[in-house]
Length: 332
Image (cartoon, rainbow, N blue to C red):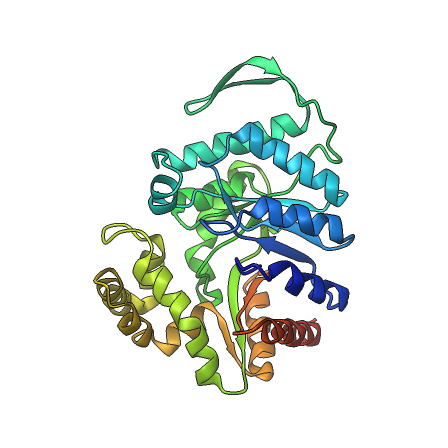
C-alpha cells in the first residue's frame, strides 16, 4: 500500500523495476492524494503489477462514477485494476465531503450492484433504498472486462456478512491473524447466503511493516499509526478500531489511548501503545522475525498482504520493500 506522499510514484516504480515480485500495489485516499490519479499514473508506467484502490469510499463518488473509474483504469492498465471499496466513517464522509454518513452498509451493497451492472453494459435501471435510477442509460465505453474484482474493507458483523456474500476480496485493518476466529463466522455466514465457499474470497489485510534489527525501534516506528487508529479515529462513543482491539484483549489499553488522544495528549498516547498490540496487528522486527510472522499470517488464511512499509526516507522505504520481498520468497 502506498504512503500518501509526493514521492510515492518514484518509490513504487523503483520497487517494480527491481523485479521484486510484488503482485499488486494499492493507493489509499482518505483526505490526502486521491487514489484514482495516482493509479492512472502508475497504470501508464507499468505492464504487469495489479493496481487497486485501497480504499475509496462509497459516499464521495456515485456508483456510476465508480463504475466509470473502474472501467477506465482497467482499460488503461490492460485489465489489472481492483476496486477496493469501504464506507470510511463520519469524520471523513461528513467532515471532509459534507455528506451525511447514513445507511453505510446498504449504500455499499447497492453501490456494488450498480457498479457491476454498469460494467456489464446493461441499461442502468435500479430501484433501491438509497439509489433510484430509471433512465436506462448504458455505459458508452467498452470495458476490457465485464467484471472488475471488488474488495471490501469491513470490520462490523454486517459488513463481514456483506463481504462474505458479495465481495471478491476482504481488506481488514488492524487484523490480528491469531484472532481470525472473530471474523470467520460472519464471513462464512455471508458466503453461505451466496452459496459459495469462503475459499473464493481473497483475504488481503492492510499490514504496517517496519523492518529493523532493533525490534524496539521497529515497533516505535509503528506506534503513531496504532495510536491514531485506536485512539483518534471516530468518536468516544464509536470507534470500530478501538472496539476491535478490545476484542483482542486490549480493552483497558484501548480506553486509555482514546482518552489520551481525544484529550489532546497524542504524544502520551503514542508512548502508551503496548508492544504486544503492535506485534498483534503489524510486523515489526528484524528480517528473521518478519519471515516467521509472514508464515503466521499465511496460516490464518491471508492470501494477499497489503503491506504499508515504513521508513523515514525514500531509500529506507525501498530497502524495506526489498527485505520484505526476500522474506516473502523465503516463506513461499
